[in-house]
Image (tube, rainbow, N blue to C red):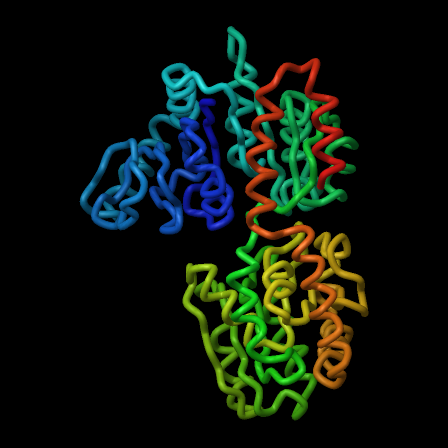
Length: 409
């Protein structure tokens, strides 16, 4: 099989997905849809197409970059800027050339607003038979961008032209069908890959959730994330949080989250741990393993990787209702689902989780059972491999195979 993945190579989600399928004897190439010259350090054994990239800063020796190396990443940025300025459709030209030379059996665009739109422009003007095209929907691709008429028009085009559609929420299947999906729907399961539960059980079992004295907050704040709302809700809890360790990860620069966290820590005598941006997943999981509760708020999301990480590591997830967390946790029983911008309701959720030992311990046990059934890495890896094998088969047999695959999930 020859597979061309069009995606953000710097993304941890892309790395986790692609890493599941290396070593199958398939020829796998990754085309950068983001054009920023970056690759994720966790990405393994794949060729990545870039334009200009900073060779000095590519420390990932397990991948081969196909592009034009430049010593300085600043200079590489300048070349990419000039390229886009004088040749705006350069990416289309480059991707078209890659498809013709590589001749993939399957093209898989992971994420719609960059990868999906890009592949769609190629397919619209393709004169011969186009490879089978899978579109994967990330959390906000339809749920959020349906609000904007210009995006909705492009989303409709992608859904009408793709052959197969995948996502991690049943919610998004309904939205895709609403907006004109013509292709087949592939089984729904997480886009971010599975977890080595055998290995992680040893870490999560060191301390019962009710005995843990840490709170994890996902630090995104901006167009989607609402980390400052989470910190405000914690502030409203007053002395109840005193003595806890506050762990915040994925803090984006210039958002005020770092400053707000420091003020909160000083006010309530909290030990503050600010986890650097782009910290490997294994370290993030260790943070959840120390936590009694994990809070993730955003105005749009899919399952939210934070929810899965918290479930696996025994921390109680408190997640916004703009995700599809309700497809994984039972509100008030195995987690708490809240509005992303209502600090009063979020405060009540935090208070309940900090005051009720039986609640967090019972939720931890139930979530572990869910994890064993749905997100073990061995299981997810098999599903991803089958995912591509089913697409590669003849159309006549595929409908039966998809039903079998769905039943197994």
